[in-house]
Length: 121
Image (cartoon, rainbow, N blue to C red; front, top):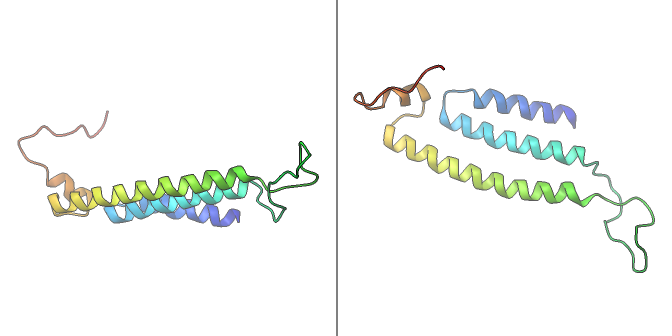
């Protein structure tokens, strides 16, 4: 599974460094999926018994599944979906206003009378 996580991160970084807004958004979504897969792998998810302690015992008898990574991933999926939809609407709105999908063209679409942002610090 580790090569899959590496592939997710590699593709995500490549897409985020692109100049097209849609590619950047897809890169962010793939990066979120890669992080979720990484958490899932690090949580040592194995085909164990459910994390339920029998009545009358203070701890389980044998090995049980770890529910924390599953809860973290479920929360991360919901937050990632909300972030992706927000960024998708933001990118669509920027495309409507500036009539450009390329970040270089978006910089050229800025009004001429406004001060230019610093290109370096």
